[in-house]
Amino acid sequence: MDMNDYLNKSHEVLKLKQFVKMPAANGLNVLKENETKMNQYLRSLYLENIIEQPLYYTLRSNSASLSVMYGQPKVHRNGYPLRPIISSVSSYNYELSRHLAQIIQRHRTPPPPFVKDSFQLVERI
Image (cartoon, rainbow, N blue to C red; front, side):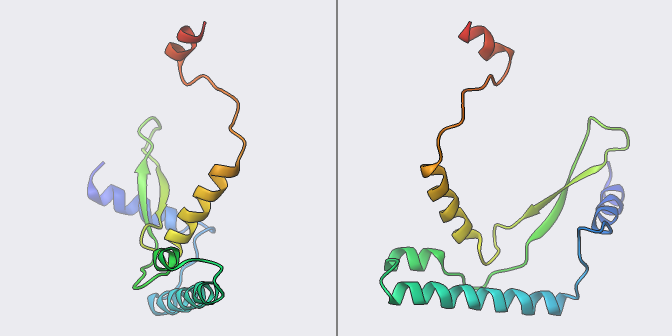
């Protein structure tokens, strides 16, 4: 797949109903508003001694950017359709969601064992 095919398929994916087209200025305004609200809430938690200073500085956001979409080609399908991947690494709530995921993971009951592949099945038998 060359670059033009990739770009055309990416544009096709972005035309789907699940993606909302928004002017860049509006997107940045929404981003800044959400970042400010989250930071204010985290600051209130810190001032009320609900979270400690190191956690506050880890979770708060400064200079966040919009999430980025890229496509992963499905090479096993005809025409190589793209699977959309949304990267939120630099988004305002990335560190907060990482922290919450770690808390949830620690308190979940472990899933039942599963067989990864036929080699693992042979080892277990």
